[in-house]
Image 1 (tube, rainbow, N blue to C red):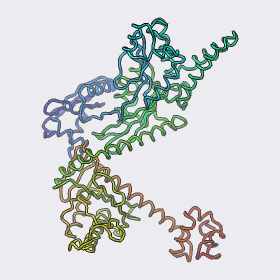
Image 2: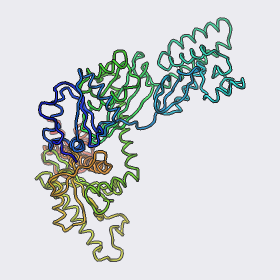
Image 3: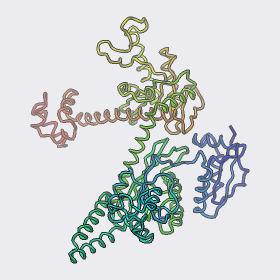
Length: 631
């Protein structure tokens, strides 16, 4: 592991110009690429105070053995060079977007002599026009089946096309008029290409001219009493209209935009894109990214735009949840790649804002589903538990993990939560919550909760005769058949916090004589793992499944504690409003709140309504009404 000081550039050797820099490891491999308005200012920040850097940045610097840079003229050139180097070197510490699944496209192979319509996945090919992506292949096939009535383009494979030409007989689609049968010469190559171009125009959003043309031809056929042809044209119009109905209209007909939204946590981010063409949602797509470096929503958007639009179709308008750090430079680069103006902005109101919220909900769902898939994988869970055991130097993988978190508001209504994960999965029936008595801060609260939990464990173990190994004893209550409340000890206790919180938990266990339970703390801000009594944290790799599991456990404890705290705070607020009512004791306060369900409904109640509550008389009800309404 190299020291960053060993390859720090000499003072004054770094230019102040904009540019792109590369960190390399001892083997010469590029591990990180970045850009800067001022190379000197940016690179000096890496070597100024190592201890103040984010752990991910520290890991990158200790992995690196050299740094070099290239000066450019403008920020746009820096963006271009940064992207090209990321694409060329694939650095391990840069953000990388990966598709959360393989999306199908509707493709038209315009590069062939006889263009073919088909479903395609994977890398895009030169000379092929793509539409989508779609969520499902069957959605493409339904759309194509409708459009082939009007645009009978070839859909068969090269082998089928060649064989039909050899025997001089078209396939079934040729006989039912869903293919113009260029294989047997029913149409010329030029006529078939014109059909394919019309098909592409319709899919690109130029729909009205085809429907108007067919309506005109239908009227002319009816006027000439060619009723069969008129009926066929009518059916063609209906087929086009049904194809259009399958795509939701969300914005104006002239709107061509990509709507991008993010959902993120400390480890990962999910990106969802809705493709709007001609005012209709033509498809959607999603990516998931590991956040291997500290970043902001704007920086994530910038990385996304550069990576995804480098070779893809760029619309006139790109709606994003946050602007990149250099929005003008990114806009200029996208405009240059598209060959026409691109507008990059954050929607503030109206239909586009509402659509952005819909895309954001999809992104949150995508991230949640990704976490579920990742957590439900037995191999991944086993790997995570072993990584935790290795990092904390445990004798065995922690099959049962308990995590504790404290929640309060300025020292009031202090509560704590205990969540349990067994074999890497949440065991919600084992969750517990605590009303904390101490008012001396989070460290004291952690000590109190751990002491109470494990004191109960020792008491229950003694009461069940487990120490004496009596017959019928154990962690299962023989009367109810359910596990006793605190019967099972964990292999690992995780507390939300750093060294002081971990030390407090360890002190509580030591005082109770428990020496077979490991303790660690997980600090939110830097995702550092702290062991009791250690001066330095344990830094687990950012992509570690073990760190991912610890974070999930910690976040679940935080959620559970917050939920309990809010309920207590809400109850306290209700009771405090009733405190102003003279002569009203705790029992009658509870009876009132239970009867009406909320303080708001109680304030809206009449004297007669309040008199229905047991123990509340006419005079008391009148006092309650006048007090709550401020009379």
